[in-house]
Image (spheres, rainbow, N blue to C red):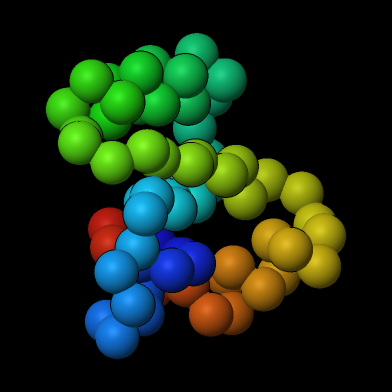
Length: 66
């Protein structure tokens, strides 16, 4: 979990989730399932690879499962 969802002082408009180690097929299945189940917009980021943004998520995000 990352982004505005982690800030308890702010009311977040969306849910930002990052995943790692899932196939493209699983990624889109999870995304579709979450879109149907949640009342807020959702963003899912694949942590495969390396970029400043991915490193920031890994450093500042909160691990929910793993």
